[in-house]
Image (cartoon, rainbow, N blue to C red; front, top):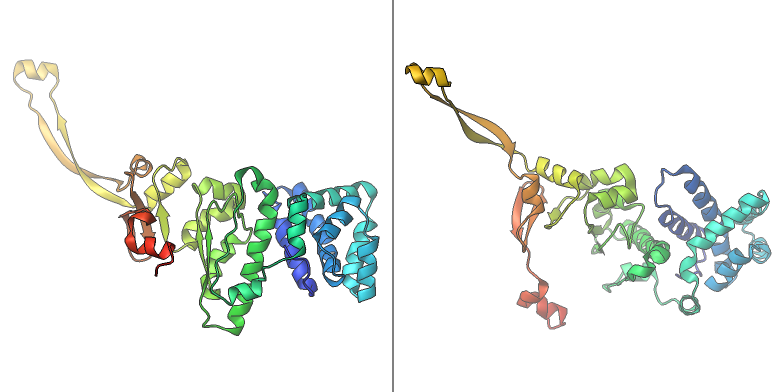
Length: 336
């Protein structure tokens, strides 16, 4: 992440992204308090690093040493009054709480606990504004063993791109859209603003493709907001193997019901049969049953999926690996 933005708003946005990514459950009030205070600390530190031409190594040093004299002096010299007041108010906090704030901020910066990463951060080669104005592709990957540590950094980068897209849209309404292809979105890129991006992003020039195992992952990360994903995302593709009962029940309900004819036969009791006075009768009726039972959704045949799209209802589609389609293969190889 580059720490050389000249505007305080950028520093605040980066600190906000780092902090929100580190808040796994906003309903946990105690955790939310420490995260919010850590965000308040990081914003003026990042701004001080920007205007003072310091790098992320300096920011990490200020946090780990719990020493804000240097950034405070930088802010004062630059006339950044509000940032200096915020930093000073945190420093004057009671010692035990201040220690908790710095400790939480240190956790949000855990991705930088590597000399190699700090060296890379000294010479950033990525600018969000330039990126959204071109036709490049940015790949952000995170190894499974480092996801928890790198999540705040991944989210901060993605959020900066989102802000750049929205800003570009106001200047160039006809610009080509930017696509977010977010695989394992609940783990690798748990963007706190995902519900709002899904709701308004397309109108701002940002198309989002979000993939997760099932809605239980979404509820764990975004709480009740995840229950609206099936409304916020216009097109849904459901692959085989889902095991979350809530997700399966929702899909079954969306598939609707249909009438199934049934027949019932009444058989006379034993006495009536012996006396020859009994007779059987058949009654025909119908009952409503789900078009897609839960087990049918769970056990979709390999190579198939369910697609829910506006105006088309729910239909079964075939899914094909990219390497089995000649046109896609040529595009991947750069032959088109």
